[in-house]
Amino acid sequence: MMAPTSLRVEDKLYHNRYLVDPGRAHIKVRPHEKPSPNLLALTRVCPAKCYELNDAGQVEITPDGCMECGTCRILCEASGEIEWNYPRGGFGVLFKFG
Ligand code: SF4
Image 1 (cartoon, rainbow, N blue to C red):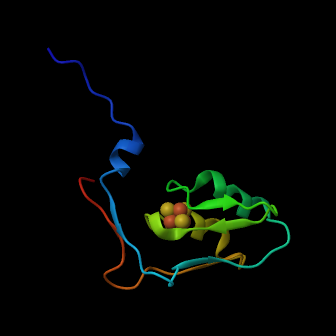
Image 2: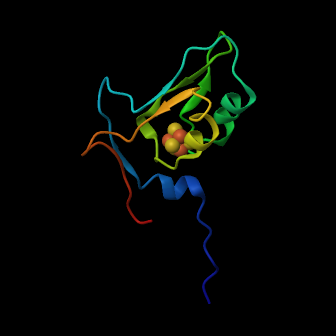
Image 3: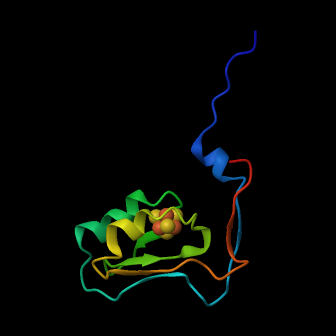
């Protein structure tokens, strides 16, 4: 009998592919002095790790690997802290193997 194999989330994410739309970020963080708790939380909850703190303590995004899961949209779009759109047609994530 074969031992069950375990697959990490990172292993599954490896199969995704992304077509980046250069110069047209589909998610933007609005300028801020100090991030709110929700905005700060995006540096921990985004599964693609798109959000980071810069040296000035502000939250920045690099949406190239975004999986369009909507987590950041739920947390911060209504408050106006981020602007969220889907990528243009033909760009963004390509899911493979679930
Ligand atoms: S939609 Fe999901 S994957 Fe994309 S930046 Fe927001 S939290 Fe990250």
